[in-house]
Image (cartoon, rainbow, N blue to C red):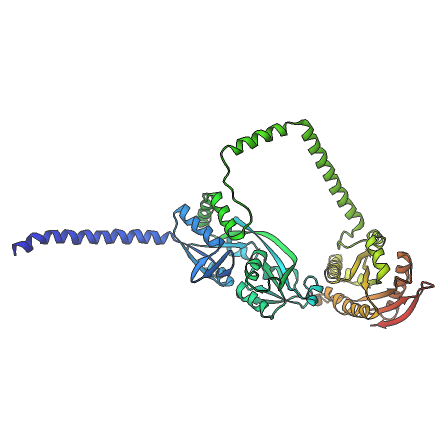
Length: 482
């Protein structure tokens, strides 16, 4: 009994000590949890952010882990489908989006911090002869993108008539492409390289057009100024060498070297001696001035031969193109077609809807001609509502197909039915057998112009096509299409 009494005070003291330790430990853990930063992004955005064997990996994952270590901030990752990552940012809490491109629509609910890494995007096409013949994105063409991604927003804005097919994430998009469900998709170049390199056929999809190159930014929820400032301050503390190491690990963009201490002073000394050399400086200045002058001349030349509204060739640019070696070479081995296109009742568009609306029509048609007519040797706006197209064709049948496409698809694509704007054109098409005919551009345009006026006299919104005979350089009738 005496033994038990002797030990009761010690047991009580031990019990109280354990309670205090548990209390303070609980408070410390609570403070730790309150500082935890939740980093959200995609689970299928290799090499930037992805989940493998249940663990988050990638360039942005490593980047934010280092951020946490440098700033003594606990980090937890929430990786999901891309659109869900954006939805997470509308919920309360200490959240930061690991990295995304800026867009005006996202700016309504996000505050961007600092740029992190550069990213580029391209149009990838099935590597097959039929697909590769068609450049760019035509109206109605199916294009695969990630739902909620910047690529989806970009295509809908720049190619509103394209048929956008959205997928929850990059893995689903590329899986669908490799299964033959889509033949065109827009992907970040780094992401495409990472995923497509795992396909046995490395060249099944190829990039045919670079769309944009921008920086990805970290972002917090709109209005969270305290966290916004905290992120900017924390990023500023991250060692540049460590950031470069992470970028090198995942993107292999540049080599990271450890430079011996003696190298930098030696290089600076040599550079200073060379920089003080008058001859060197003089040569550099002369070279720079010469380069600037050439660039200026090139710019002035472009202004002289380009239509300022549409960016197409003007009459002088068309004449220069017709006399070029490229066209002369084509004329020895290939047939050409010269088209004169005049928009119907264009003055009524200007009078009724205003000159700005008329300019929109001209710009829209210029883009349609330039981006879709792969057969176009020269595409020009001669003034007002008149266009001239010089096309490379193999035969009459191909010309008929082209005329049908231009007449039925490209011309009406500039219409805006919601404001009562319906665009049609009268077209004169002259098929030239270049091996049997040697005419000046003025003569060819004169004949095509006559055909175009016949289309107008026949009721407008139609095509008159004829071939140029070999001897008298006079057109012979072929067909009239309305």
